[in-house]
Image (cartoon, rainbow, N blue to C red):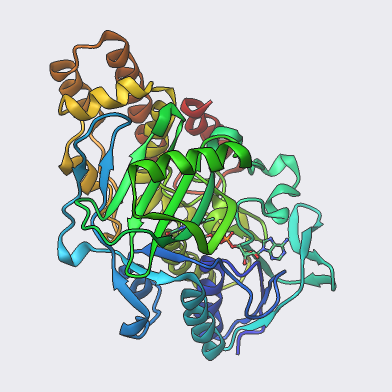
Length: 441
Ligand SMILES: Cc1cc2nc3c(=O)[nH]c(=O)nc-3n(C[C@H](O)[C@H](O)[C@H](O)COP(=O)(O)OP(=O)(O)OC[C@H]3O[C@@H](n4cnc5c(N)ncnc54)[C@H](O)[C@@H]3O)c2cc1C
């Protein structure tokens, strides 16, 4: 038994997964979660790449607990023809009830020796000099050799760290998406061409919606890069219903409004005694907000880094390798997507229509975005190729300007990721962080 104490703040997917690997390898690991036992997650399903479970050393769930996700069909605001993904069978994601995912991960972690303290809200970090030495919670102060922050996007641990550590705090409004999601009764059994329909900028509103047919209900998601007003939301849902008769009027499950980070990964994820994982490190895919697979994959990278630190120093210097690995295998592919999201927010509905109808965006592009199973870079961008294609196809000078700007920013971000310091040096890391974040300002 290794007597080093690991504190995991928040029972996020990445947090519970790294806890399992470390406990299995003899570390003394306790997870502090504010919710009560059995109340985690939302009353709906999630989609994620099953390869991430294997990567993190977690067995597949029983077969009756998941199914494979339908290909999505994307629609521009007024363009009647959608673009359908054609994801190869071996790259398909699975769809699973969130509470079943949690149960599966928690049971696995408990079997590995993880201790969980439910009903324990974390208020912030405890600093001893420059080092994160523990957490303040509603049940008192807890000290450890390493604090792993898995408290999600609004983590009070990350947000209360001293400024000089250079770790960004809250995401700004354009860096998160507000989501309403509910399962409605199925109002019609008609066969629809697009079973999983994703719609951009419906009625000209900046955001994304989906309507997906399930056996017993119709799944509706409304996502906005702005606050959601309840009165307007009801009107908006009514509009979607007019065009999608399968959407009933009765909410049978879900119905909450929640937020997801959609931005580039955190530029500095570690400090002495501290590492962030999952939404706390902004690991979601910026365009769509999926974060489960990345959090699970990151858990293996973090655990490997911790275990490689034979002197158990757990300093920014020894933990830096975790960030390097994450960027090399995942983050460097996500950051350019954050540039794509930024340009999307600047497009008009007409320009999105034009991107679809002119062939600037194709079914292959949309399918590429679904390749979440690969453990190397998620997305291998070619900004130059994208700009060259736009120069040939695009006849709209304003739109072309936006695409060229986006291509330039993507190239800058790709170069910044490649230039990330290989070894920890505070000054060099903090100045690198400024270069990396610049295109997103
Ligand atoms: C509506 C919605 C739908 C989504 N759908 C998908 C999907 O289909 N596929 C996908 O891959 N991803 C999806 N995501 C994103 C996904 O949930 C996250 O990216 C993923 O769970 C990783 O986040 P996390 O576990 O780090 O953080 P979270 O899921 O935010 O978990 C943080 C945990 O910390 C706890 N916590 C928070 N604050 C405190 C505190 N102060 N003290 C103690 N505990 C605390 C929370 O209760 C929670 O258990 C969705 C997110 C939302 C909101």
